[in-house]
Image 1 (cartoon, rainbow, N blue to C red):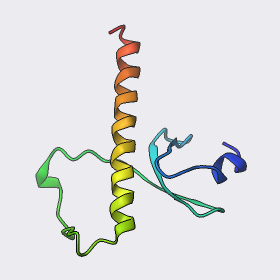
Image 2: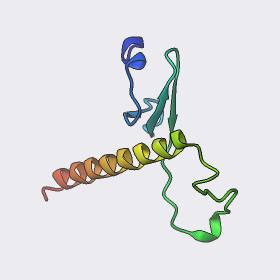
Image 3: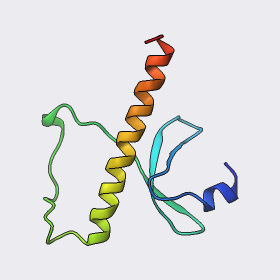
Length: 91
């Protein structure tokens, strides 16, 4: 990716780091830098602790919108990943 491509990233875009191949979802573009988050699947409840419970009253509307966008981006990413795996196995 070049600087122009970085500047033009939008919320919901999915990028992949070249060093480790990890995927990230763009949450915000601040012009000179981009904020992105990593998806983690939780399967073993004993390994996790709840730090703060989310309520509609405690969350700003922009955060709720960002979470909806992230959820949509994750579904798209997983569907594309599933299709890629199926194509690789001739399904």
